[in-house]
Image (cartoon, rainbow, N blue to C red; front, side, top):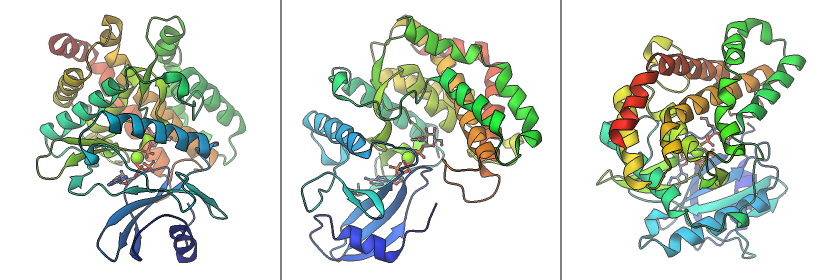
Length: 359
Ligand code: ADP
Ligand code: GN1
Ligand code: MG
């Protein structure tokens, strides 16, 4: 990703309704998609400035319309400012700025919060589950037709396989030959990984308004109480499957290793963490159907394999989609995901037992 110049940042900040002069602006956070900066003004007020990825998002005005709709809706139902993201308007009143450098938005920084890359305790993971469960529950009656489908087929796993086959056929960097084991692992599971999508199309799994990117670093906890505070990164709020919101959290937060851990011996799917998350999610997201409950383990496996396949697709394609900080990082990310899938397969019956015990 290109370094943002001071010139671009200063010009852009002037296009927003920020009361006081900006004191400093520094890169922030561990997201893979947008370029995020922490902005501090002369009064110590802080903001999150984001250059929105035009690689990932082809229609930013529609994306920002979704975010404005969802945050307004949630704000009406919440008594506390810190529970919902707040956009800072542009000078012209819009929710974003489009200039020669790209698309930008600013949120108020949510103070006294923490954002974790890995749970420090089971309780942290439990609270993240409560936050994502509540998020989905709060949007249960949201008028879904008002939402744009920001990335079509985002979690349509068979379509992700189609893109994987395409990149394998092109192999633009000549990298496919070195990752045959990973390719074979992914292809061997192609039919099974389409199960949820087929059930959605058959009407067996209901479409709901979902977050679609429920990793731990997309939720803030209260720094003092460590309770669920605010779900962030709303770029992909769209119609989707509840089992995928559940599953994406397991993929990231139930892993005993980092997403890009190189030592795969450190990477397993913790059944204790799986139980913790299941308990927290189901406590705040009620009313899932029996079919959804029975498919929660499949949601976890599908999200993990799909994400591994997306990392490998990007690696073979030359690393254009996910931000990388070192060579081979997308391949390392792919390998942790495949390791987790294998581990889930060996713990499959325990995962189902846990859901049955916790529901
Ligand atoms: P990306 O799509 O690149 O993941 P995010 O919207 O998740 O971008 O933001 C990246 C990081 O910035 C988050 O993981 C979090 O640490 C931090 N962050 C984003 N918005 C806020 C906010 N309003 N208050 C505090 N921290 C935030
Ligand atoms: C991206 O934006 P971020 O870093 O929270 C990606 C997710 C992946 C995740 C893998 C819009 O999430 O789909 O699961 O990386 N977001 C988008 O860590 O593609
Ligand atoms: Mg994020």
